[in-house]
Image 1 (tube, rainbow, N blue to C red):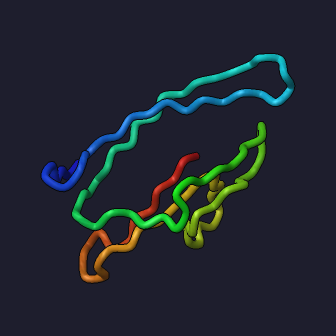
Image 2: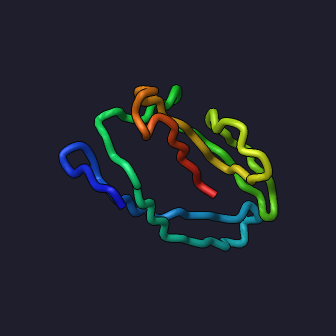
Length: 97
């Protein structure tokens, strides 16, 4: 894992919460850890401030943020960032699966 501490964090951790719609009170939690391979001073650009989506049991993607043609992959929430085309890190994808 490459690290560029002055410009960012090499690792992010958060918890995902899921709740059923049946009113039964069934809930679930999952810890997520994201390890970044390259960090630089070009921040991701997201057209919206907040994204919402729903994932049904055994369902398909319902929210996609300009993920670019990933054939054969199931996307739930995805985004891209823009970087200088000359840099090795010019294409990066963010995904929650």
